[in-house]
Picture 1 (cartoon, rainbow, N blue to C red):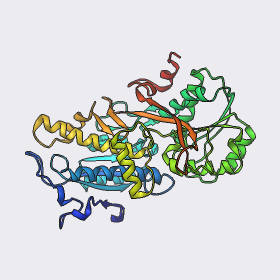
Picture 2 (picture 1 turned 45 degrees about the vertical axis):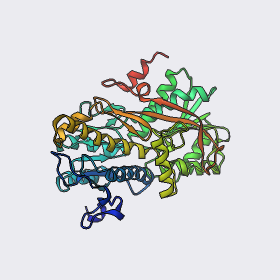
Picture 3 (picture 1 turned 180 degrees about the horizontal axis):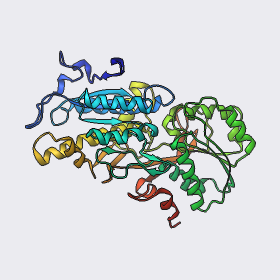
Picture 4 (picture 1 turned 60 degrees about the vertical axis):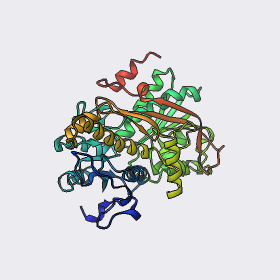
Length: 426
């Protein structure tokens, strides 16, 4: 690891006290009794390069926005927050950086992780290192089976398959008469799991559809012309994809070039992660589009969401995607857990006490109230809807907006995914 990969983020830097990196003098509050006066170090893992960079960047920006607000208001129990950011890349290198954050940088918690491949590798390491790890995204599932059913230190995102489940339940509502389907999903656990789950839900919902093609390009592929030609030849009534980052934009452009969706329905369960890159000129109306857990243009959104969207747009000239909310929730829940544990003991909590306080905690996030289940899984809402050009942006939005809770769209603790779906009373 080179030092260039690490960033000590300056928050409200213009007001920072001399000799102290990243801590605004305007609000350096007095630490509460029993609380150390030095900054609390929080390790962040974020993808900032490659095809997934837009999603990772959104998460990092949400984290920085949170840190700036918290430090301006006095920090956590009077301790300023110092973010130490490392790159998420392949599993091996990311695990090394994870260990470094804990062993060398002495962070009190690690937050982040998007790729399922990476989080599958991080999960067991988190259990060895005796430090809380709160995952932005990705899960510790492989082949729809949980690999860590009883974690002590790891707190995990919602099941990857939730967006496929939500799309599967909405497909009969919006796309009646579909008889044949095709899928194009990335060739790793997330892509395979979403495709398998989507088909299982359609079957359970009573849609008698026939899969005519399934494609699994490698993550990072940017030329889909051969895949699109195969889809044209197969002539499905509906195409489903769980592409979630820059690849979603690329395939949409290449599909538009040949008019793929002129006679075909489309379901993009997760492409809302790069929503403002889905320009009207190449993204048609009438697709089912998923925004994961935050929709930036939600007319029922909270004042907190509206403030975040407004300030994000002013700073970056972009509109935020859902990963900002995953990131905000994770770090806000850590703060709430520290404060909860402090209220019980009157001292800065140990890492184990923070873990105990996190279990079952509920906080206000950008998308509304979100919580951790007792088994360390996030609970929240998912947003999907039908693409429309009727807005003031140069990209598509959705109308109507469907909001589905993980209370109904995620398997209960201890259950097997496909057994749970097959047991639905529809």
